[in-house]
Length: 281
Image 1 (cartoon, rainbow, N blue to C red):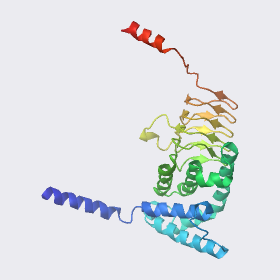
Image 2 (tube, rainbow, N blue to C red):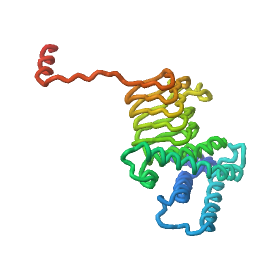
Image 3 (cartoon, helix red, strand yellow):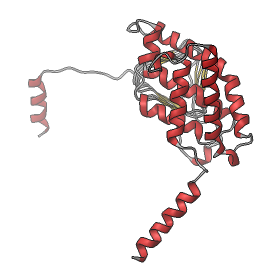
């Protein structure tokens, strides 16, 4: 009985400590979804906005929601919740332009995409980029936890894990989405294309390296095909390079490089296989 009571007291202590010190995940997810529906009518359940005043009204609601979410983190931020909210909405028009450039890059890069509307509505890669670009503003503003809650929500929905600290240029193309991982100190230039299963990660997971550049730099106009792995903070993929599928790369390559996996595939008959097994036995 005492064990149960002590356990309950421990849980109560944790709940009290957590109260008003951590953003509500439900509130974060609601904010991200509502903002997406405001920016792109593709995600609205109906035509909600038929005048500028209605748009401004919704913007005001989102400002209040965001400020309320950020209040729980004020003790760990250099700026006030209201100040961060202002920073975010000042940058939102620029991010909106970036997102259209991303959608255009996906449309132009994928022969299967029939319209821009299809890309925005249905492509998980576009959703992951949206969440990343929103989260990156808060990361740059020094907001803890909140940016990661945004990108992990996108990770859950799209299969793409982009750390909010990564720096990614305009016209970013993600095809087929699932399994892509992009680390915190990654730098990606403009017009870069990445296919499913690509990892841009660190060579070591040592905590001592937390403040150092641990992830690669990908310069402009690079294409990285499926399941390639590129590791290390000093690794630079020169501009206009192509990294083939299943390549494992830990060293830099100069601009205009083409890197392929040279693994050998052998085909033999079933009879030949059985004879080989008999020989080994």
